[in-house]
Amino acid sequence: MYDKEKEAEVLARSITDYLNTFNDDEMGALLVEKLLNSHRTLQQNFMRFVVKWIKANANTSFFDLRNEGTIMLCKDFNKLMEEEINGYLPTV
Image (cartoon, rainbow, N blue to C red; front, side):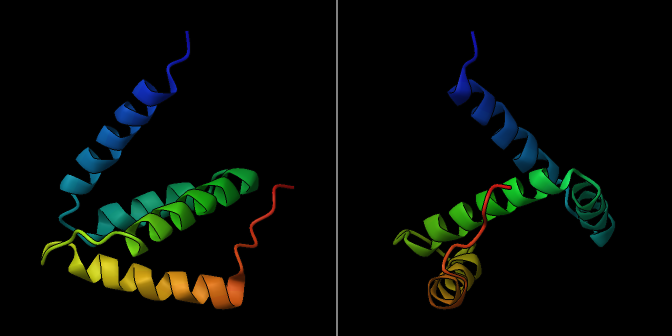
């Protein structure tokens, strides 16, 4: 049986484990390269996820110095998305 919550938990842990070893720009560049080489529809799906992540961070009221920069940037991005982009990421 497919367990979406368990799969999301495993994926989140994999991502955070990868980011926890993000001690140089090379690892980030490698991840970007792999994502850029994925199927175009999957790139669009990934971007939809990024937009959800930005919106969630923009709407949070709990943050501290460790993630304050992220929250402030997400608030700015969210405003731009609402004003300019208007959430346009269609499934083709």
